[in-house]
Length: 190
Image (tube, rainbow, N blue to C red; front, side):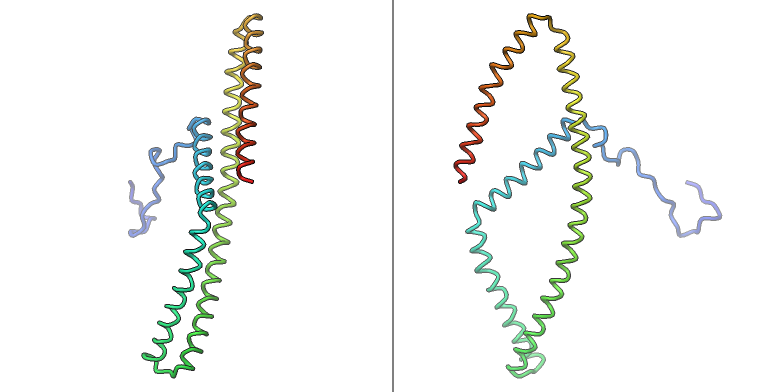
């Protein structure tokens, strides 16, 4: 680290991040990146399904808890205005209503700002994820296609015919099984 006369004494030179602190996703295998994305989608789906299936418990907690919290806050504010500020009960209720109105407006403003910033972050992250997973999918697909073509070119005519018949005999029942499972899953949801 050099100290030159043109650098002020209190300023620290900018540090370049080391190679060890850089994320290693750029050189990760496409299959692993794709698997990581599928795991996140599965976890998110599990949380959403759990919330949807237990909506009655969550709704009852919200329906009972929110009014109770608001009532406690209102009574505390009324008591504050009556005892500490010294207002009579009528003016204390008016002051509580106006205070609550202002607090709701401030909370609404902050909520809208937070939602907008989260939306912008999610939009940029979604675009980045689309590009990442699209590239990972393309790389994985090209790798699998190359492997399959290499394997296919090593076969002679008889083995190619046998492999085609095996793919058909395995593929058709497998497709039927998947369609029956998905159909029964959809039918059970209705």
